[in-house]
Image (cartoon, rainbow, N blue to C red):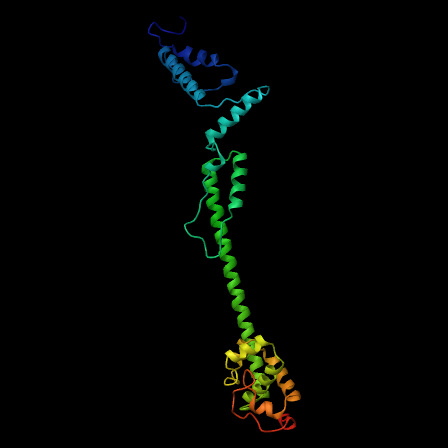
Length: 272
């Protein structure tokens, strides 16, 4: 045979000049034949390539032709889904769940069921769903904690501003009602509230023992009486209550307090 010795070895000129030409235009310039020196090597190279190619085909999901039946196409899609790790039923999906959620945070079973349905419809792989659910839950927990923290900060700021406003009004009231006048005038307000206030408010003031703590403006606030309201009822008391009520009945509930508030007339009380 031209170019091949009796031992099956390619002559140099045959191996370098002729064999590459057998590859055709598709492999022009290829070096694949450079190390093929004899027929044995060439045959083994062919056998190895053929075996590897057949093995790859065994593990390949063949795409059906465009004109394949719906059944064939459906089987192809099902095979692809199974190979990717998609479950046979939506209930097989596992969602990542943290051991403990932040206080006040709850999971939505309705949302979980809806997600299962959508993911199964699109044949999402189980591993992908688990990874995505973990990322989603961690994001949700982070967002929830951020909202809670923001609410706490907003509440603290509001409380500080409210306290500041109360302190300013307290200072103003104590300036207008200096010394003993603070408790005396506050008891006039109490007498007016006992006469004209709601039962609920009167009850709160009685429970707070406001008569004995008349100068404690914080207690008035806790009982639901703003300082502006305290001022208002003081004016009402001066205009409507007589000296007898103001002196002996200013206690919560309208009686029981024996200490004299003032033994003066309404006109005289107007000087306080």
